Image 1: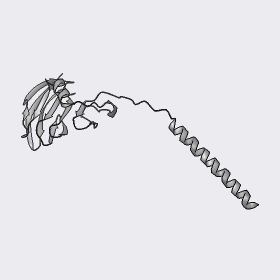
Image 2: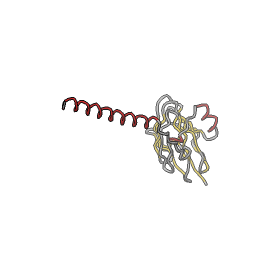
Image 3: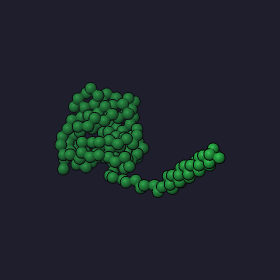
Length: 157
């Protein structure tokens, strides 16, 4: 009789554990989803992915990341586009922008380029681009690969 009694208790415990696990499962499935917060608009857009970039002046929230096609970027940044060719030469070589202006760094070669632009190093994929917002008034020179001072830009208030 003891064996039968122990068998009954075991079945009860199995049933209790099953009910607890089932209850947890139901709670997890019916859990309300949290709203995602958009913290701020991006200041750096990468054509190859929507990876978050920290610039010297602001941070981009992943939830605010925006993806632009190349043709959309060409249209939007037509007046603030800086082209980089295969020899790391830039067009324009010199320009003046206002604080808060976003510029398009446009790599027109088939190889990636490492650019030191406004104190931040960017790697731009072959035929890729990045959008960078200029937030500090100053004059700076740009390095591209092993070439130094390939262009000069001034940011004014």
